Image (cartoon, each protein chain N blue to C red):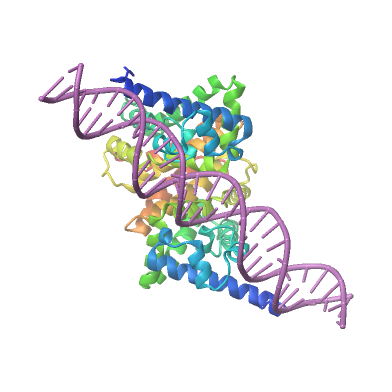
Length: 197
Length: 197
DNA sequence: TGAATAAGTGCAATGACTACACTTTCGCAG
DNA sequence: CTGCGAAAGTGTAGTCATTGCACTTATTCA
């Protein structure tokens, strides 16, 4: 499962966790820009140097995962139920992510987290980069699903648009309806471009 | 036209230009990350403090304009010839921008500039932000053209997608064909969403 | 002419991040 | 068990962008 081989890796994961926890705590309390890396390191009782051995930069302290996302995204396309179109599958996947958020939304702590990310330019940009980093992988999966060449522009476009749709949907008061409308646009455009398939 | 009222403003514009010129020169010669703000200031024979009085940050040294773009973008939608769809108008506008680039492409200096922007993360992000800053204005223009409420999600989506299409098209070996395919997708989706209009 | 204002300067500081030369701690082969 | 090499952690000192401050200089305009 998740168990590490030895004590060494356990301790490593431990300090990493301590850093992420301390960071979130302080960021939520004082605001991202009002907290220095030094503060985080001190709170986790490690040196600043160590902090940067675990996280490539200050923003990364906030986003722990990022790798599973790509796998899930590709899987959503590749393993979609038969008869379901690619855009439909993507809409459902993204909306599911939203729903998961909604579950947590009861926690005011989580709401504060989202607000912080949206209100801090550095974090907003980082989150955006995080998602668009998976564009190539998603485009490849779409191309495979559509039987198109790997570098087909329409597949790349659909990938990009779907990923952009996420943030568009997120800031809308009624995410589900927004998702329907935005993906209806993509759906129509997509199927029209693939009459032969 | 462009003439400044007095000598003061003339000198101001002069040092600003000197800074932009020196920056471009050095950046192209050594690479963006290998040049410090100090180097640029020295080359333009001003202090670092002065540099930051003219430009809000290092990246801004590279992009002088940005304001006319929004006006042109909105105009492309608002003043499109009758019978032409919004996505079509946008495709033409963006492709025109590409074509202007193509004119300059003969200049190896300009090609080097584009390569630098694409290869430097800080500049790529800045350029991207520059374009997406106009999303709201574009969305409003589209909504007006479509007779939809100002905050219609589909209009916002089309605006965002069109702006994203730009970078998608730019990196494609055959921009014109890429633009056709990408905007065909948007066109179909858009008209399908507006059968009543 | 002289006072208000804007451009420009130098200095010192902050805050993120890196390079370096260490010490400590594990893991593992002999 | 022993001891060696790798990995985790440390502290210091530095770079680089960016800002605040107190200051000089040039331009404008009443």
